[in-house]
Image 1: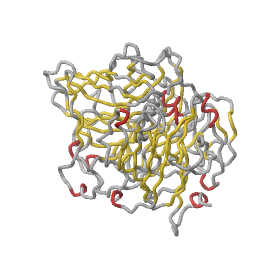
Image 2: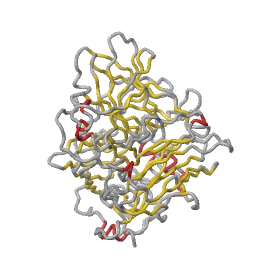
Image 3: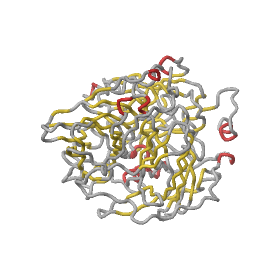
Image 4: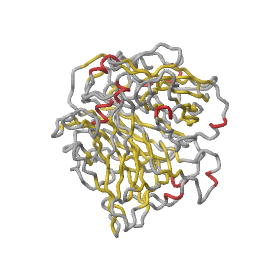
Length: 568
């Protein structure tokens, strides 16, 4: 369901913030941090039809990557509010490269203008003690990291205008190599921040360890974002609900001029695509002279395909990739795949997103050509100079090894629902009372570290929803009742490990069952505490379609004070 985004959507006010206490020992010290000053010329965007270039990149050294961000905003010529994370030397939303076992240290100063306080948050909280229209925090999406203050914590973390905060994210030694991403996650403000462009990729290096096919290939990091259509025409037909951009090159209605991707004739490239849209679903395809091309899928949601069977670590030169002529990427999803350059005989080569039917109450996600692919007879290192290294990374065990055959300790049934015309959105455990998200809510689900659970998530609405779980991945067991509304299940994700999955709309026929997915959730890792699950269509998330899960320490384990207090 579409509405015109603003800095704080009015319908999100009904589920705006009210924080509850965290233990004092969990607070991340900020008083001694030097603020990051504002950076001139922030939130820059490219002209339509520009050549696509990789985002700037930063790399870890000796186990650490330390980054300083200024969170900034400006208004573009169409009156749209833009946002960005800027480094002191002017890099916007850089790609952050780390290795398993590294620490990512991000010091962020919120340099957006101060706005009136909406609601006080009872101290102590994580960071600021109040919530304003200009508050921000960062979610390190997909990472299997701790939900404690100062790491990947979004329930209580608030950074207000003029405040400086530091994250110190510890990546586990068994973090799968692949593409993750970072973006704001302050409740009620997520959609506006994402449509404003505040997002960047995180790459856990080493995927060539699992899939040597990518070694030596030039790689592209492609961030696909959305934003309001200029003039806000009513969507329908050829008018999309949202404009798209490719690495900040706009594909804007009505002209929808494609960006330009240049490849060297005869080459193969490794594309690492993030759907960083707030609300837009993507179904990506490479087309040569009208013929869809096969791409070789290497990874999904940061996890290499075919990497969890416990045997791939013994392979030296072969692995199993997934071949497909299109790649469906829900909001916040990621896909990594190998693309062959068009041969010289091809006259028209295009990178596009197919139309996605999101249901009668959903957005209008139209077919759009994102980029025209042009071939050169020589390399163009200015546009694409990143090469996947050939050397092997240190050996490590797959994080989710044995999950498919692990004993299941609990089964749960959840469902998406809406209350229209008030545009209230819910995700609910079957048998419990529907409730809009509020950080002060008690956890909707409580489990214990070491558990393995099967969750069935059902869509009872007339529009698509995208299920996302923080802190861990899940194994896709089944996709059921999709075909009743004409939607095909996504065959590429069956049996894979994801952190975000699409559940298509119900057709409204009372004789038809609801579309649903069943996933196996892995709580055997070290992460304990409170975190969230939600629909990753940001409009729905901001308007209440989110809930808290609490993972208690396993019996007899020794835990930090902050984690132990969560079980009291």
